[in-house]
Image (cartoon, rainbow, N blue to C red; front, side, top):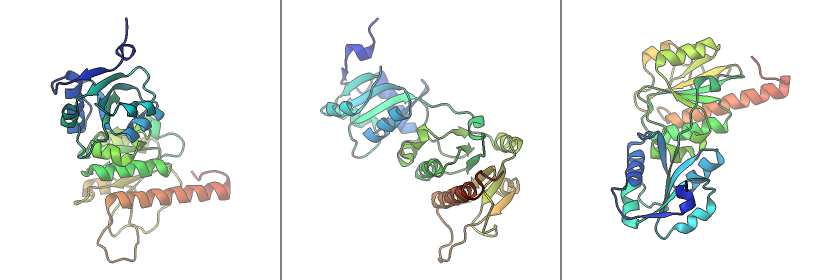
Length: 274
């Protein structure tokens, strides 16, 4: 039987096309589609998805932008050439590049981030998708082993979160868990939980061992109940007169400090302190 890829690209002129509707739903809702696909937009994210080993299901190219396909290893993906007004009806960016895709969502288990000497970020109620995506990118950059999303946190598959992650969302193990399940999994592996608070926390923390950084909502911060379950509180000292740091910046600073401590331990002792 001949696959759709072998038959070549198909031209789509209707907004009611089933694939176009799925793309619109995925980008609009920022979540997995009913077919368990995630929707992405833009050439860079498509390239990152391919480099990360994800399987492209359907690639959408705005009519006139077929040259963008030359940059991609499509595998067996279905390719649709979409009329300009139909493409515009499905995507969410104001000035789209002219390419988007549905792809198989990566699947991760919490155990994947608890091997070796874990460094985990716990996002507790983050609402801004840009903050979440930035944290995921910083987590990968500074050697974190994964991220846990507690209830109330925006979906990682939100289009803005994916753009801010710049592809890290395709590679870093990220798992959504209930708070009880998250803390139980961390405790079982001897992971110390550090609650990031704006004030009244320790100015220094030993992050060389198995560690989790608990960061809270942009406005409300961390609920007292979740702070109480942490092993310690940590506050980033800074001399400026600002009231608090943006959660993505604060999380990134703590991740850098963990990476710095761990690299120093390797240089000094030949192994990470446990």
